[in-house]
Length: 113
Image (cartoon, rainbow, N blue to C red; front, side):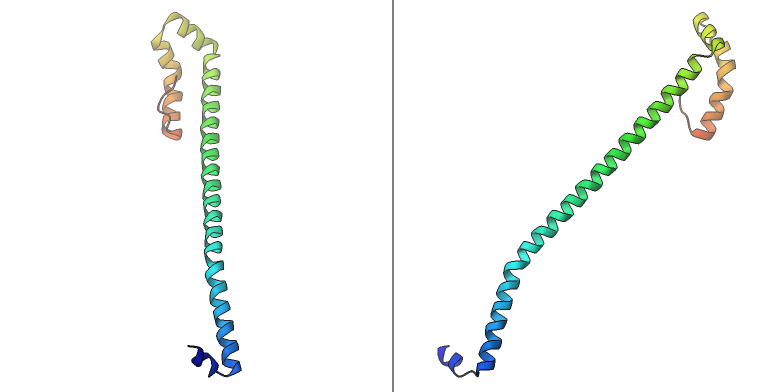
């Protein structure tokens, strides 16, 4: 091997040394870069999951507020209060069924409480 190296011209020796340093540099840097890329991907996925969670939580909260406001509206109609106090289910059905059917058709409402 030593004889082979001595028989090379100076340009070949420099090129071989440069190639060795280049390969060594790539071999050392590549794993570091791959770990950094993996960490960036993990952080990005985590942010996306957190954003999705926050969006879903906000949507659920908004729907709950809508439902609560609708129930408060209906509960504060004097005729509904009177019919409810008297236990008059027929009167409640007459007053609220048309509205419920409309909401069921247009907004896919399943319950009206």
